[in-house]
Structure formats: structure tokens, C-alpha cells
Image (tube, rainbow, N blue to C red; front, side, top):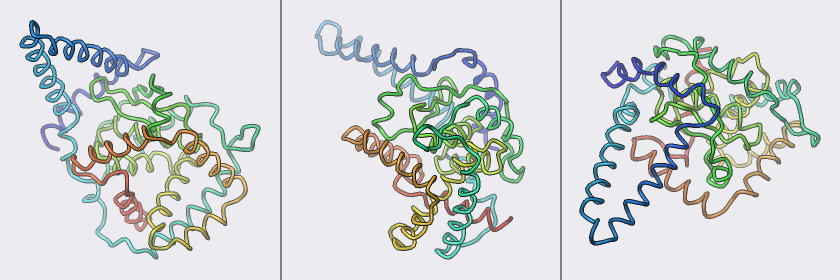
Amino acid sequence: MGIFERFFEVRKEFHQSLFQDLSFSAGDVLYVLLLLYILILVAKILRNKTRHSALVSFLVLLNILYLTYQLFWGMLYFQQPVSEKLPEGKTSPAAIKQLAFKYLDRCTETRKLVQEDRNGVFKVYDIHKIQTEILANQTKIPRFINQKKTTNVNSIKPSLYTGIMSYTGIMGYYNPFTAEALYNPKLPSTYLPFTLAHESAHQLGYAREQEANFIGFLLGKNAENPDLRYSTEYFALKSLLNALVESEPEFVKGVIRKYPVQMKRDRLAEKMFVKRHSGMLEVFFGFTNDLFLKSNQQDGTITYSYFVDLLVRHEKME
């Protein structure tokens, strides 16, 4: 491990436990206070009498935030990639297709075990059980992939920005200043459990988005909780199909036609959620998030290729 990884490991449990007992997100409150303070500074910068001192304060604040972010989180983007821990291999369309059928079968079977709402759509009714199993499953990730320390600290919380998040396309995020994993509780249930697993992977110390997807997949794929398992399997299936949608559109359509009626209802619920919350805000946040990911040497949100590559290479081992 590099020095920044070791620093993250040393402080991880203490940092997460600081705000664990708060029922709300301390990080979300912090961001609101920071925004208010920045607006006050900007107002002072626009006034001649207070311009110099306010500008100095503004620059000092930016430097403190930037250095804290890099120290607590940003440098983790440069740790050893998970791909280097898996056997070498080329991901072929044939391998992706084979896995797509496998996960369609798994989704079909697991879908029979989950609960539904009155419209026959998959519905999560107990988030706490899912969180508990995610934390327990951190210890079950193969050692050759994960040598990071697990904490069993439950600091996964609903975001205070739920209303806004639904219109941004952001399902959850990790706050590096408070070590909280935040999620949008208004998401369709097909998204929700895997989003929790993904954000938990960030808390473990996986900064890259697609690696957090892969670690989240490992946390959920063999879960005893059927909600977590179904959401994880469904994410894997959608990712595999997404990887083929441009090159093999007819294959993708054919797989979707094979969805059982229950999964078709779930898919429709997802599409309706996206349609209700689509707009310029989603486009803006999607664009800026893509730029952010690429600035940190990652694939952007436009592609799932890295996750699919990790998934295919891992499946070849089983």
C-alpha cells in the first residue's frame, strides 16, 4: 500500500464513527454552510471596502478544501487498480453475451423471492437489513482482491438533497470530509440496494467509480438478502447489455424480450422514474460528473467497459 492508502486505512474507522450516530447527514449540512459562507464572501468581494480581505479568505478556504480533499480522498484514485489483481484476459462480445444469459437466469430466479408494491413492482421495505448484510459481506471479499480493513461502522444515510438528486441522475455519493455514504431514498428499488453496496465500497477505500461498482457487485452477488442480490444481479445484467447496445442492438432487444413479466414491470418503473426526472439539471450534472471522473483518470459515466471487463475476468475464475 502507498502512503495515502495507509493513511486512509489508519483513520477510516475513527472517521466513519464520528458521525455514525447522527440520524442525518453531517456532510450535507456542511456543504450548505460552506455554500452560505462562500456566497457571503462573494458578496464582500463585490464591495470595494471588503474586497481584499474577502478575496484572501476565499482563496484560503479553497486551498484548505482542496488539500483536505486530496489528503482524505483524491490521492486514492492513484492506488493500484483492481484490474491488476485479476488474471489477464480479453473481454470478447461472446463472453459478454454468455454472461448476459447467465445473469438473466439469475435475475429471473431471484426476482421470485422479493416483495412487490401494489403495482407489482419490486419494492424494498427494510433498508437496515440490506445495510447490515453489506457491512458483513465486506469481510467475504476475496483477499487477493481486497486487503483493506473492514470497519462494520454503519454510516450509510439518506441524503438531505433527495429532491435535487432525483433530477441530477446521481444515485448516491461519498462525502470525503465526513466519511458518510449518502444515497437517494427515492430511487426505484431496483437501483437502491446496489447503490448502497457501491457507496459502501467507497467507504472501504475504492475511489474509482467502476471499481466501486465491482466491489459493490462482490458485496451483493451472493447475498442472503434477496433484495440486495436481485439489485446486484440486475445491475450486472444491465451493464452487460449496455456494453453491447451499440454493437449488438438486436441481441440486447432479444434479451430484454426474454425478461419475465415481473422484470418488465421493474424496467418500466425505472424508465418512468427517469422520464419524470429528466431535464437540463440531469444533463448538467451528468456532463460535469463525466468531466470529474475523467479528470481523475477514470472512465466516465458514458461507459461501463471497465466494470464489465472486471466482471468478465472475475467470472472466468469461477
